[in-house]
Image 1 (cartoon, helix red, strand yellow):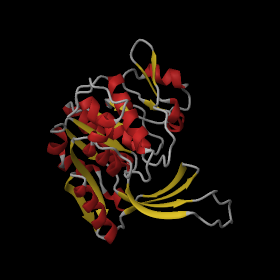
Image 2 (cartoon, rainbow, N blue to C red):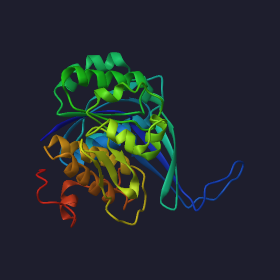
Image 3 (spheres, rainbow, N blue to C red):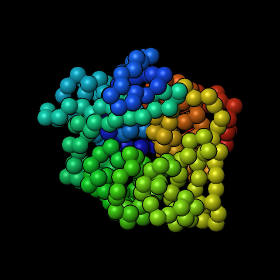
Length: 301
């Protein structure tokens, strides 16, 4: 069983479903409201754990009722929470999501997630050094994200950097990642002066560009490659990217090659968007194996 360390956000999602998004100053009547578990870090940890990985979560929550529930949810999904810290001076993080016609937009409030700092990463060096792969995203302070990537780079630990939500970063950080996984919008914000093809060629076997229904693109060192998405009718696309990242981490750390790992991630994401909630649809390994698209050569147990 591969050890995956996820350093990231842990939050509560407040999800509104509506027939339209309100204009400025407008009030609309929604169709439904749910509270679910989220945070890109927690989502990716759950995605990996459900696929059989031994997952350790590093993050921060408040001492409020949401913090208790968030930690309990991680434990329910068999994720190690010894390194999830409680803080008293900030509320647990939250995301406020509106879903219209299966697509979502999100307002994220970091809260306690912003309290994890580089000093804490240094203190957890041993945990990170022992990982088969580390996953980190942008719902943490950038100095903390950079500290994680630098620590992995210095110790020869593979790291997946999901630069979402996108923000300006020192692009030298991408040279230190093993893989980084923006979507199309995030790519254009990160690399304003590069076309997609130029970016893929600049970072062969490193940049993995997720493009929703158009699939995933990367450059194999010789030519640009597209791995098609599986065609499904989406119920809720929230968490699709997180599911892909968590599944890709499991596959690549289990010895699958790049193309196989991306197909594995695509299949997990396609299953996830057929159910409601960022974590609600994330498949187990058993559910993956029940799919007609599961490849018998994927030696994941």
